[in-house]
Structures are given as C-alpha cells and as structure tokens.
Length: 184
Image (cartoon, rainbow, N blue to C red; front, side, top):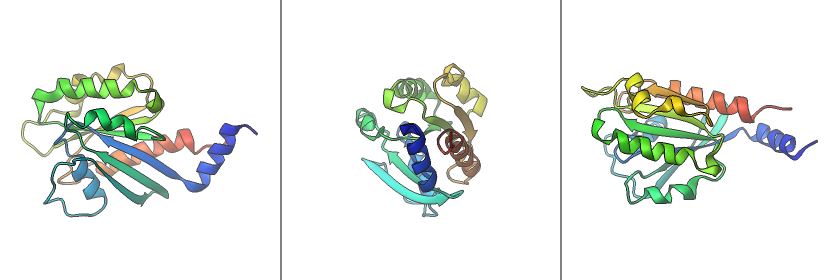
C-alpha cells in the first residue's frame, strides 16, 4: 500500500477540508464567512490579518481561513497556502475599476506551487448591487477559461442576501471530495 493511499484513507476518516478565502479588500470575504456561520453581518470592519472559522457542512469539517485583501497584506497570503484543499476567490462584481488588479492577483496566486491542484471557486459577489457585472462578464474579465491546472467554477452570489452561497460551497466540497476522499 502506497503512502498516498494511506494518507487518503486517513483523510477519509477525518473528512476535514481546508479552504482559503482570498480576494481584494472589500470584496465581501468576511461577510460571506459570517453569513455561513450565522453571525450578524451588519457590523463588519476590514480584516487586518485573518479569521478562521470551523463548521460542519455535508458531513465535512470545514476550516475556512479568511485573509485580509488589502494591498499591504497580499504578500503575506503565501503564509497560509500549506495544506489548502480549495481556494474561494471573492470578487466585488460592482467594482469594475479594480478587475485588472483582481485578475493579476488571482493568476499570480494560481502559479504558486503549494496551491497546485487546489479547487478554485470564484464567488462573483455583490450581485444585489445595481450595475454588478454578470458571472459571464466576471469570467471574461478574470480570464478564467485560461485556467488549466485547477478545477474551477464561478458562482454569482450576494453575501448580504445569501443568494447562491450554499450552491458554491456545495460545488467546492463535492469537487474536493471527488479528488481527495477516494480510495484507490
């Protein structure tokens, strides 16, 4: 029995998943995390480091790391890459002027060796705001179709209303489970 098989079987028993939630500042990462955890979303301030929340979903223990997206904090993102099963990239769909920056940061992130193979969920957040770009427009602006080294999906959502948040999380969990929690 190979080491990989042993590790897969060990993880099968635990069914624990590590998700890294990233994106530019003010994209809605913390609001999404608080919404999942059933916390009040009316008083949210910028994340100046990171938040970790652990909760159960679909018989999995999810450890979600929400890391601040300010430009001064992005160089520290790499400190959180180890053992990441999935990346939740949150985009402010109403902030058209920063989409180039968002694309550059995302594609730089996906080149990181420690994130190779991690599943990518892009939350096109703030769909409740007037003028928000559609999922297809966000997909094109971020050049998601060029991504080959990661399974990815884009989900239109609203952290405020909760629209499609569970759909996105269900997708990322199912994709990770199909890759990691299988027995050879």
